[in-house]
Image 1 (tube, protein in one colour):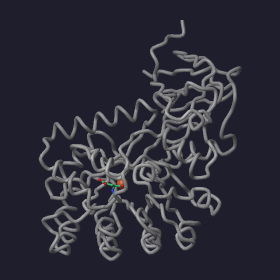
Image 2 (cartoon, helix red, strand yellow):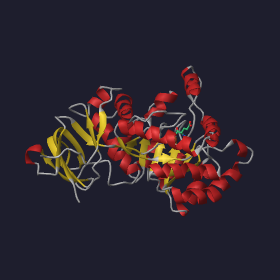
Image 3 (cartoon, helix red, strand yellow):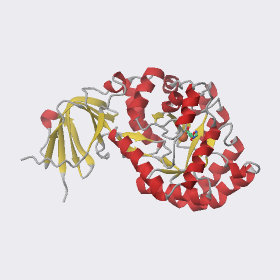
Image 4 (tube, protein in one colour):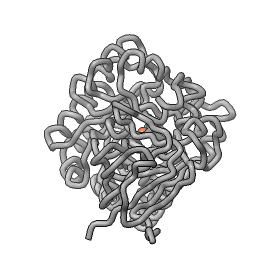
Length: 387
Ligand code: NIG
Ligand code: FE
């Protein structure tokens, strides 16, 4: 039986509808988990249940398109050493790999579920999860099986770093990633990703791995330009049709030109800059050049151990030149574009009814009141009968 819920009393509603991205004094109807009507509160139709959000701002749920949630342990000591002056290095990943390989399935699942609950409590309703802390055929496939229990947006990241046991023969590891590991992981993955960076994988290795992934039917994503400029990696990702290139911390004119006019989203991860003391990327420059951008947390135990999309919005506004609306858009619609999803990230007719209410009259309060838990999901259908 179909059930409709009228959400009314919305002081400010963000839909991202191109004709009218936000509207005051609004209402909407959700039916069977989908937006069925949007308009002025005064014109709202009847529904099976009704909820009054008492003037609060309602926005689409956050789409966190970049997370590494299947791991064990943490690296708080490494963070403290960094804050005392040590540089972030890709090699730190290997210590989490050792700890993750030792962990049981239950430990990994429970840790990932804890992080998802944290993210959800702060307004995230769609999340991507990568493997990348197993780096054996069995451990990568295990990570993706667990990730798949939690989200359809799963990414094979066997090419996170060359594991210690292959240090003397990296070609053999790339062969493994493109061969047996990909074969074991692709049934559980939608995407393939490579960390193309000094200390991780070279441009040629990246090309090989992404090509193998595409041949196996996976969509392409890329970590690039996190620790230094890498216009070649960005050009490669764009030319191969990657859905997203993530980090983009160090941008050159060539990078911006390659991204502009392409179908590839630049996903910015300001939690990494916060936690590694690298400079924040110039989001304003990307937007002004016509590049599609997303904001994501990159939750992982090394470079950004946070699940807070509101924090990403605050950093993007304070440090990266975005307006509050642009930052909210990048954290919702931007993330959906980075995952090539049209059903989430907006609240137009037919979209999934993933609503987040803010304990505030406007989304500008997200960056204006940093660190305050304003955002929470509005679960539907609501058990509030009309009469
Ligand atoms: O996205 N850049 C590569 N991977 C993660 C960091 C992983 C780690 O340090 O454990 C990232 O920043
Ligand atoms: Fe990452």
